[in-house]
Image (tube, rainbow, N blue to C red; front, side):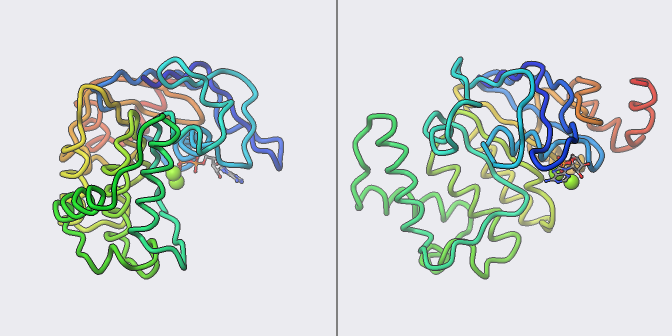
Length: 251
Ligand code: ADP
Ligand code: MG
Ligand code: MG
């Protein structure tokens, strides 16, 4: 599904290498987690995959279902089935949440050569999915994320994800700032989307999210590289022992 080979990335503005050769393959149907101390390059990886400006790929490749995504515009990446949920979801004043969702869904359908969703069908689907995420009708009418609490923003992102039905979902610190109930809702939303045709990359600083979203594979990132890969037990090891011993082992 997602294949990253020897990915090396530096900043556009200054000569600073952030990713120093990341190798990662996320298979369809699997949930991979990336953990690691602050400043390891986790967010940079998700930004580069999303096509955010300010980063230069100096080496390596990233493909989605065999297609080179690094060459694509951000909206082409989305049409190809990539979805990214960021630590700080953007607010879009003046654009109603419902309108935004409908535009996004139909743009994606168009790019895939599918017919637009009728308004009746769209309303039915969006209400159903919003309900399962405990997002009320009022929130669907308000401008995207404007004045939403942290938890509401995160739930709204999961709603976007559920509506777009991506092939590969990347969640960057979706758990930060969430209380236990909101984290449960977000996790349930993600778990409901787990599917044999869909891959997940869950980036998190803490183990607690992984109690709810059980990963198949756990990677530890440090200083721009993945320094260790294991099963769910690796996340538990980090929870009790921290990262220091893994970093020492690597050194
Ligand atoms: P993580 O998500 O693992 O905490 P980041 O990807 O946010 O790590 O950051 C990795 C490193 O790159 C950090 O040292 C950070 O300061 C640096 N970095 C990332 N983006 C920028 C930027 N736009 N300008 C300056 N430094 C940056
Ligand atoms: Mg950080
Ligand atoms: Mg980060």
